[in-house]
Image (tube, rainbow, N blue to C red):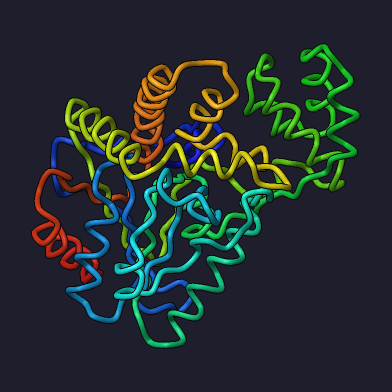
Length: 336
């Protein structure tokens, strides 16, 4: 399963795509960096992104897949993240899978750099990059080349000593009025983050670009897969029971015994978090699976909201067979 935060913060958007129609308007895609054709396949969990990517790769014959999933980066977290099988990875080259130890907090900045390198490698070979996954912020970081602020733990520690969020908001208003105007005075997490960057870097948080509410032209064609809520819920539950039969609990048991222990990020992965709670004696196994299903369904709705805000995405029906969808995706990719 993917990370429980589809993108990191709420978005505002100039308009919302019409999901009832297949053909959505989108800005013209300029060739911004000379990279040969690239296609992104996005959508909520369990919508069939990996199956479509494999079908597209087979149709083209020159494609390599870049996983845009914040949890598939971790080694030994295989069943619960629904990684492609060894046979699939042997057939089609995959990137950014199994690149970090689960004791690491693999960051967005590190991912962005690795994805840039993977795209450059694929382009240098004259091949096609398929960016596939549902981690919204990671996706935007790659296709829009976001200017990502760093982390400043000392500044953060100082800020967290102030219990009054209103005081922090007033401080932000003094240091970076534009950033303060964009965040509610009660949203402590976003206020603290803006102050952490402003104080730690000496650069206003608002100077890092227009933010996630802007959707500029990019050089990547984007396909989104959608499902009815009922079908998505059914698939999520079905996948969990399939994963349990495949040994998901044993995988989590082995991870729990590893030293150094799981990082904060890895331990929060959907499915893993709930099974770890079971192994710690906090809940029964049935309760853990039920909670994992419920939490993943909630996460899928957040993913839907995240991706729907992007007017550049061309939406397809995830209930169609992968081969039909691949033809539609390739046709979209060929459009100027």
